[in-house]
Length: 261
Image (tube, rainbow, N blue to C red; front, side):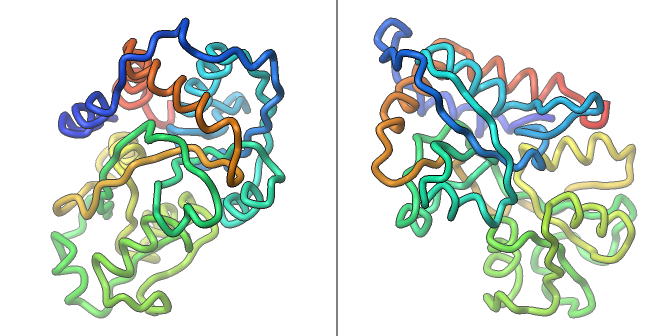
């Protein structure tokens, strides 16, 4: 998988010259991190049953730099933001887009990744080629996971702004919606470029990307409001951008990693 050159440049531009020796030492503090394990290559369970991905590698590096002990828990996407907001967990990670409306419930870290929203269709799709031609055909359906950026992109960037539009077929997970696309039950699935290119690459022609990117979004970790972890995590993120660690993670998971292997 590949981030676009523009996205990588934008990510690099966010970096600040923070040196590792300037980072706080949190004295082995335990930090309970919640994730969904359903969003490869950011976080998922591999064929051996291990929880792996870009975010796990990034969090391991953050833990080393800040001297924290990470304990992982799992929950569903729709429960994650409320649970972190209520203080059930110290930090949430699952490719969460930084949005102003979410900032009323949780605090965000600085952006650790920038991505673009892409349209995924079956490899033989010829009825539409972009958002406008999809919207113009009332028989076409799009899958989406409620409350996610792809869901809102389908509602507001492609269709009519009605969140109950019957052309949006709702699924509990992104993976379920993708399987519905492959099976022909829906005609379009949206995902950011961190996952879309990987699924297409692994499909051996079964899937393709069409049209122009619908939007650009930044991902951040989430915390309970007022968390004292935000500043140290931000400092660690900045140091990882400055010393090339983020670039190395991007190379590993978006270029070298092959989905499904």
